Length: 82
Image 1 (cartoon, helix red, strand yellow):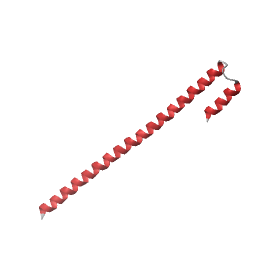
Image 2 (cartoon, helix red, strand yellow):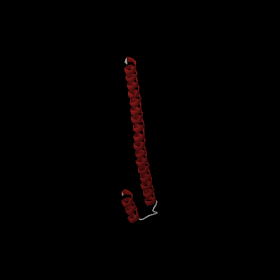
Image 3 (tube, one colour):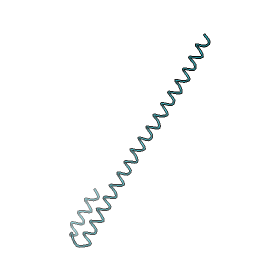
């Protein structure tokens, strides 16, 4: 009877450790996935900002070279702010 009780406690401890390992692994994987999504979002925003800055610079250059009128320049500025 004593050996059966010891075996039961051993199994309970083993299953508890396995459950803890699974929980920790799930937590680590979840954290990495969320961090990856957030990093990807930040990179996407940075890329869009850089593209908008490049477009504004091109618009200023076209206006400075006289390729577009003041009206076209101002309209382009308004559209790039959206």
